[in-house]
Length: 205
Image 1 (cartoon, rainbow, N blue to C red):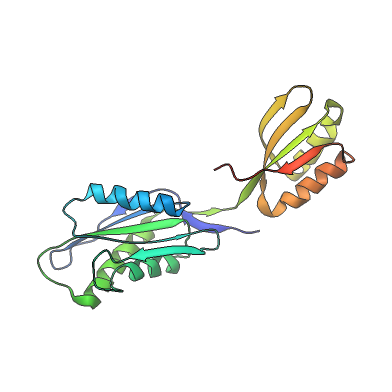
Image 2 (image 1 turned 180 degrees about the vertical axis):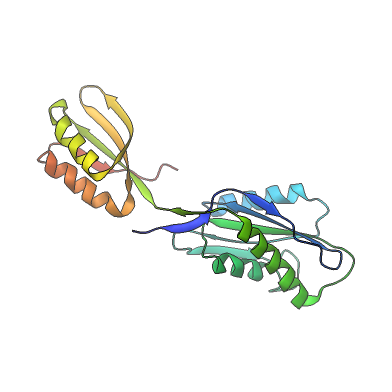
């Protein structure tokens, strides 16, 4: 069964200052690049005194999409260390923004790598991690005479019914584990001798 790990909710963590500088890490779940951009913009408004808001995110069940930014820090000193922590924790659909408020003493590239990566790691250690199983929605329409066959099939496979409409025929929207969707569709068609109309819906999110 295909699954992936992500964070359950947004959290913020600030480790002890390093030579007077603050590194405030904000972690949050995301599902798209557009949401990642919004998240960074939101964090910027929370910490106006911050000189930099370095970030990294990874998205997609296989983590195929990612991006990072040093936001003005020396190349490779901020965004990449944050991304390495995301990957080290085995997460996707997650973003980490580390807001730095300069304390008056430069840290050097090595010090920045440790500061940004350390803040990201500490925040991710404190985040609640959840395992997500991708699901799809399936629409099934059938005559009332087929109700027993359809319900027996759904019950036997533990399928959740999200919505039912009772008109000239019965229309139900089901939530099915993606890896099992083909079997569920085939099972409904077999149980109703092909009389039920069954289709997988596009993602509604």
